[in-house]
Image 1 (spheres, one colour):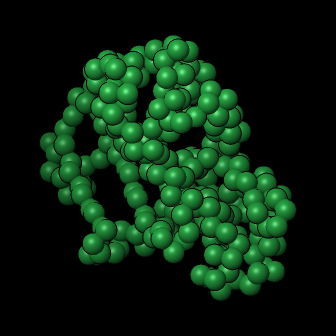
Image 2 (spheres, rainbow, N blue to C red):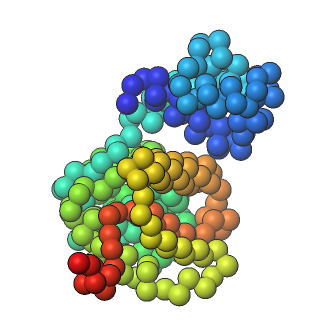
Amino acid sequence: MTQVQQITSVVKGLLKQQHITYAMLATALDMSEANVKRMFAKQALSLQRLEQICDVLKLTMSDLFLHLERQKEQTTTLSKEQEQQLVKDVELLLVAVCVRDAWTLQEIVSHYQIEEHRCIQLLARLDKLKMIELLPGNQYRLLVAQDFKWLPDGPLERYITHYVLKDFLAARFKEEESFRFYMPGTYSVTSVDTLRRRLEDLTREAASLNQQDAKLPVSQRKRIGLLVAMRPWELEQFQKLRR
């Protein structure tokens, strides 16, 4: 990803965090919404336009570049050793999931059967694995990106395939917040590329919203599982009927 792409991505993420739509931005910049969309699609942000957008976001240019540097510092893929350490210790995995969602030490120990001393030890292990940076007062800085990708056929993917997805899909999806949808289709290469881009946009938005909501106490948040998937596939019973 080029620096221009990174800046554009950060700006779009900040707009979403502040719930500023393209239409709202267009009004603030005295532009048409179509031109704003075109500007982001072509990644044609001049320094003057960038400064104007920062004013809308109530940020300085320095703040924007600080956001960019923080994003660049975060790991987007774990190593095989990091993944192995997580999947072989369920308490470590649990605390890793909690810190990704910005839970405090006290929130973790009050919600789960993990004593404070043990939780501090687990945080220290995550620090050693370079997934967080421990700070004074048992605070920490997350070093892993919200939308990090697990290794293909690595320890985490195998764990998720064997345990997480099986448990997740076995549910009846009857809760008010639940949503389940499956639609097979026969698509062109162009349409498949369009669907892939939109699914990738959805995962980035989900990561951005999770990061935004991390500012709230855990009591005002709810754990939600979001499964996004697409692959060439046909039901086995259908395959048996092929000529």
